[in-house]
Image 1 (cartoon, rainbow, N blue to C red):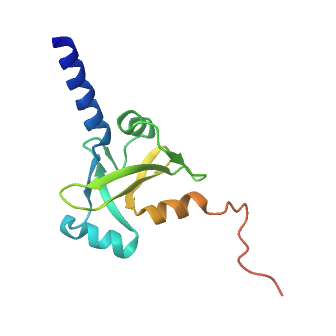
Image 2 (cartoon, helix red, strand yellow; image 1 turned 45 degrees about the vertical axis):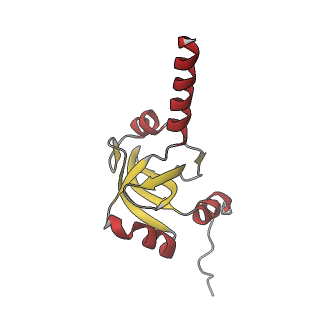
Image 3 (cartoon, rainbow, N blue to C red; image 1 turned 120 degrees about the vertical axis):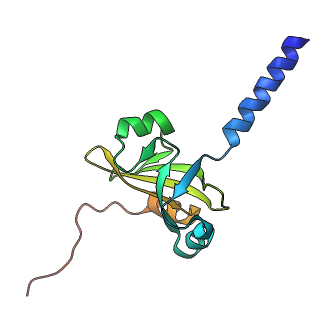
Length: 131
């Protein structure tokens, strides 16, 4: 009986942790995070948890945040279900890399995340024609 109660409590705790939104810290004034996210579709963040910030090695991001839900062609990683601490701003964490290190962190709305995932892949971009 005790084992069943302990097992049920452990399952409930695991489920609660699995659905909790990981918190990130906003680079700007966090009181305006939800407003900025709604207006602009994205907002810059300074860290994702205590261990991931600009300059963090890609392998460390993988160790701390796990596998991203999606990897874009340019090496950007997407992690859904993040929130800015102490706000109602929630969205997808976007982690951009340059030479194996985090170069930019931002939180984007679902609409922006979908646009990033469905953007056409262009090999070359036509910018001008010669006369």
